[in-house]
Image (tube, rainbow, N blue to C red; front, side):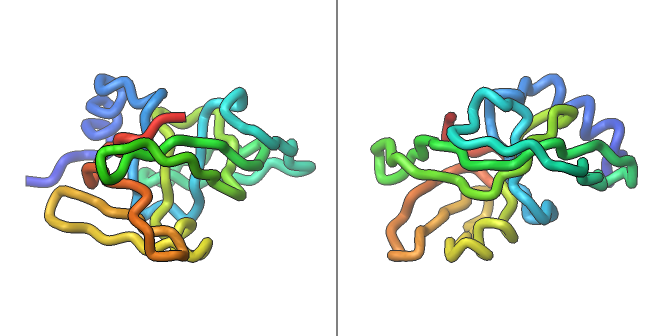
Length: 136
């Protein structure tokens, strides 16, 4: 049985994903809703419109880099996410599979788990397919 977009949005709000990340195979860009998390930030001269799964749109108003810690191989690994969009109206932070692979990462799904490897083929993140275990 398929869920409606409104049901999925309600479930995401209940999970309090504002301080967590979702690995999203449908997102074209990695997006964060916390401007304070950016180590380098540039406001966009023209806001970009981000199209959501229900065809509504919200504005991206800046972009930059995030210094983060990812959990893999039972340890925390320091890393940087580049070219992340700042989208204030998101319900959670989205880690885009497409965006990661365009930045030379390899993303592998194994049933409900996800592994992300850097360009040196080192495992940098182990997480669930729906909510990662890395933090900002």
